[in-house]
Length: 145
Image 1 (cartoon, rainbow, N blue to C red):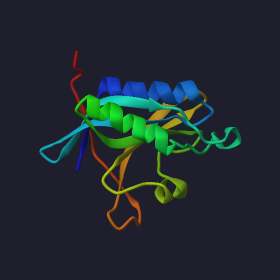
Image 2 (cartoon, rainbow, N blue to C red):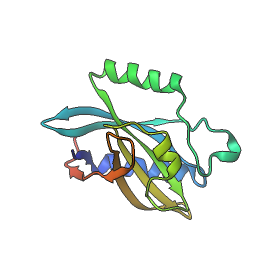
Image 3 (tube, rainbow, N blue to C red):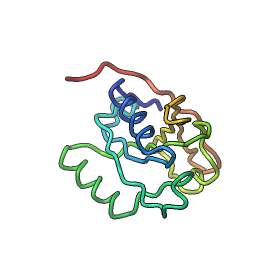
Image 4 (tube, rainbow, N blue to C red):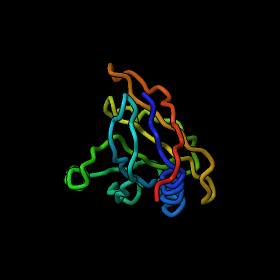
């Protein structure tokens, strides 16, 4: 399955990662599945609720915040397609921590941020058997007004 995002969505993720550096940013991807592809309609920034000493390499979106995002998505007639977060001073590849806390189906966009600059952005999807992540194709679509 591929995920479609606009340049604006990608820029929002990059900027969020840069603005929270040297800590991890996090958020959700909202949209629809259309003809077997995830089509992102908007990014939904979340606050990293991980304890302050761990925010440089961990993020936490608490259940109440996910429920709030789900309620917001329903009002917009959208669904949660995935999540994004940053890796400050680390590659845009899933960590073991990411694998331990992920779910199949969802897309996981990771932006690598070094010295306050987003340098790489990748997308991953967990295998159904939860054994590892596979790269997920990101398709850039036209921005919508």
